[in-house]
Length: 544
Image 1 (cartoon, rainbow, N blue to C red):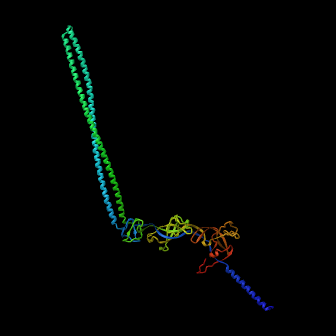
Image 2: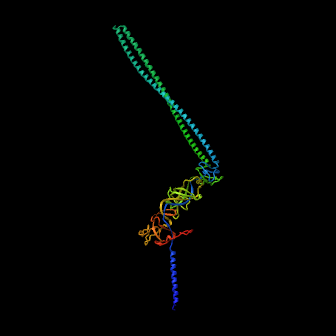
Image 3: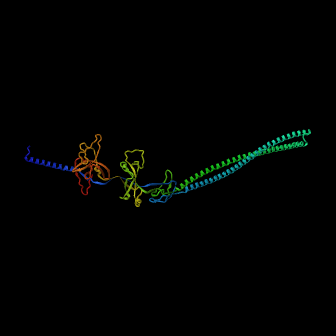
């Protein structure tokens, strides 16, 4: 059936309207698909700090968990929680009755051992006196032996002299005998001559007198010889008597030597007994000292100055010692206050001793305290572990942490008194600082895989290209800068990371505009994509 002219006009007009609607809808749709982005202008910051933030708690420089070292019922507790104590101050008193009686018994035993020691020392003196007397007797008998030996020598000398005199007397006898014989021969010859009338009677008488004189001399010589023999015999008797005295003296010397040996043995025995008594006395003294020490421990005093942090025991509780010793109280030394935090293993390498720290204690509100890192433990602790050190079970899926000790500095008295062990704290450790830096928001930096069709630019240089390994492509770190209404990817080199910004060491310059978000758009942007600047409405928030 043929269409009338009017029908054709209606159909053409309808078609034109539909095409117009489609074109208009397409234009509107195109404007709606253009992404809106947040843009920041790069400015040089005077300072950028890289920090590590972690939470922990206030801790004193040391804890002393005072426990009972002896058994006994708690009679009194002189302090209460929160009290400040000084070293040596009495804290807790236990019933000392049993330990005091044991101490008295040991004291009596010690005194008895001291008396025994005095007795043995007096025995030493007595034995030494006996030894001295025996030595004196030995010396006296030695002198007697010497005297007797001298008498023997003198008697023997007398014998020798008498024998010499006997020899001399015998010589005189022999000489007198010769004289007698000569006088007799002369008398006989003179008698013959007298009978012959050769000599006178006078000469005969003279010869006769010589014979008589010679005989007298012979008799005298024989008498002297006999006297000398008697003297020899008497001297020999004296020698025998002196030798007998020598033998007797030597026998007494032997007896005195035995007495001296016995006396010395008595001295040695007394010394041994005294030494044994001294050792027993020392043993009793040591036992007494230990018992006194145990008794004195019934009064527990503060080993350090600090604050009483906890008193788990009560008056009337029976305290025991040993493996299950009774805890009495806890003293916290607040002379130096620390904050202990745990740093994740991914950030611990940034932390070093000496780095400055800003600390906020929950109990002090927004007040910031200054501190310094004093210790970084070398052993990691799993987040599920309650104690430190190496674990026998290896759990590679569990995150690890490291303990870091921060010392609070320049605390005034009011703040120091306000701090208590165990208070929650947050520490911000400044790990690095850079001055006059070019930085961008952290979320503006993204990593992309290299695209062979699109070469990212560096510092707006479109001729720069990136060589990508065919085996394992490396990601490129960069940002999108706004060039007119186009997004251009620029590769950058980064430095330290602050709380919200990251340092750009190369690739950007001051004055450029960098696209920072939203992240859902930033991560899908392509090189050269058309974007439009997002305008923030009053009272509205820009969602990333």
